[in-house]
Image (cartoon, rainbow, N blue to C red; front, side):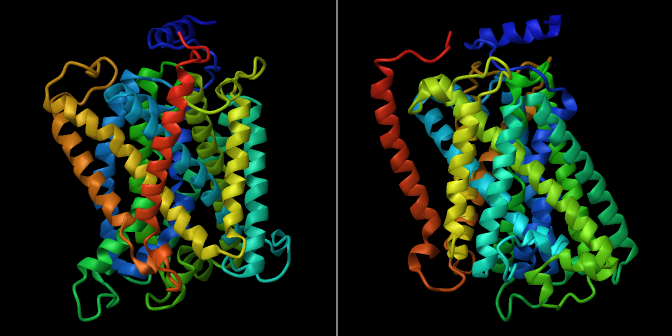
Length: 500
């Protein structure tokens, strides 16, 4: 063990835990885990149609607005990552800046949000792989994700993707990091190439960002604009996943905060350029394909079928890398909560392989549950879309379980949880940044969860689906309270696994 590893292990012991996981991640691997989660090439390609469909070209202005709000959240998290470099980041931060019940609820919410996110990103392969090669339509029939055969094939491809992610992760964090580093490198190069090529095929100038395509009709553009903001909100979360691997990162008090911030900055700039490039290069802004196929249609129309397929293949690589990163984050949250004796079968879930120094059983459970979520898509694609949206609402709620109590300490000028300037500190900017993080977090939570029929029940077939977001939040929180009560009773008779 090197001197740095000994120092990091001693530091972790001071925070209450023994070093069990392997510290095999450097700065780029830490950054890659966060960037893979956000995965702008995947999410912007996948979700462009939501923003454009609701807001037209001018929806691009929602991107910098959401970025500013989420970057403030990112900065608050970066401080906490430097103060508490522990796996299960949101769960650990929340319970330390608030109390155990609130922290447990934050972990509960993040666990659910992550597991659904793994399924949501894996199922996106259906929109890409059959377009690259028809042979990826394994069950035959129509590859359209909304068709019965397309929905079934999406489950098959998604399940294969998740299974591979769990197998790779079981070999240890260094091998997993090699995959995410490779995926991120390919993704960054892919974004740069697509942006440059689309700008060289520009059909109009940047003034396109002022056009609305008349989506507001005779009313105000405010409402379509707010609805189109969902696209950016769906993309810009998960940057905290770099902190989930803190116990496997060298010098995490410095490395994790830097990784989180770099992830957000690069994602913000890259995503904005990608959207703008698609708008200026589109063959026809009024074409229905802009709201149904999105950037993939612009790429294949302007760059040709062969180059378009290559770009889509890069997107598929990014999807796999993202699924691997999200599954790893979900596994670390489950491991961290189990290590504290806060989950059923905690001893098994907190077990770390002596050979790979990885929580394998937590990863297997995450994989099985994620594949279970995929099965919702069997003949019920509209329900799966709603569930995916709900998972984002749940994650944003979990974020507030960190930013709100952190703001409370700042307002009281409490010395608790003070950031160390030697690692990362907002200093006098901490209070205003934290205020923006909380206010904007509440705004996004309400905006995403607002029961818009076009989002949650596009077919207009179910009032329950339309109001599924607020209903789901209530159900998840109530179940969480019940589960916490059970865990607390069990904890009275058991000591935390490997806890010091």
